[in-house]
Amino acid sequence: MSKNRTQHLVYALITVFITVHLFVFYSLYVIEGDNLMQATGMASVLQALDSQGGVYMLGIYLPIWLMVVIETVCAFVLAVAMGSPLAFRLASRKFDPRRNHPMIFESAIITATVCLMCPSMSLLADFFYYPYYKGFDIIDFLCRWFRLVCYNLPFAYFSQMFFVQPFVRFVIRRLFASNIAQRNEQNSNKTVKPSDETEAIADVIIREDEIAATD
Image 1: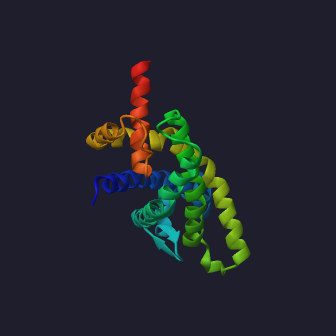
Image 2: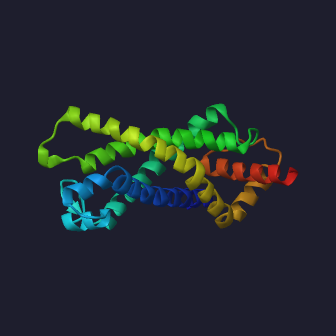
Image 3: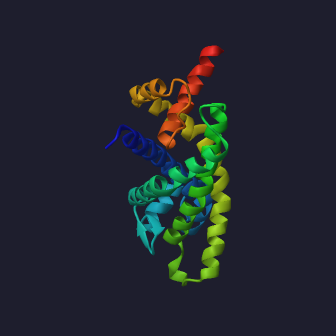
């Protein structure tokens, strides 16, 4: 496996791992917390989940850890196969990390990623958590999907922009310092456009260091 591929997979895995845990909290506590406590008569969300045997998913009740595993696997596959590649292509149409301010390019990738991944994961969540015990109605399914997108999109955007991606770049900068330095040497004249998100992230980090050095 190439260094770029390894870096790309590690980047995606760290991002997905953090994001899934954030959304589990957001979904169970912020969105559904009051409903769960009212339905079970419990004083906390964890007590409510314990009393009903876990999280309702795929028509049955599953423990939270299994819910996290399922969502992490699905999100990781979607991010690697669709989210990251398409987001990089969309951002690269208008911006270049070698020339533009790193925050502009990074913001473009985050925006594109959220716009791709949020509806996709919301659709999966709708499929996972639909109340099948009430029967299935396609109109209701689509309305629930749209409602989930409305709930999830603001949280996804701001959490990625201000917490998740800055933290992941901080980790990647230290885990793959040699890869980033190699990219800087190969592209010292800034003529080689990044071919994928891994190289783009390296260019963003390099530009951040250059700007910091001039301040």
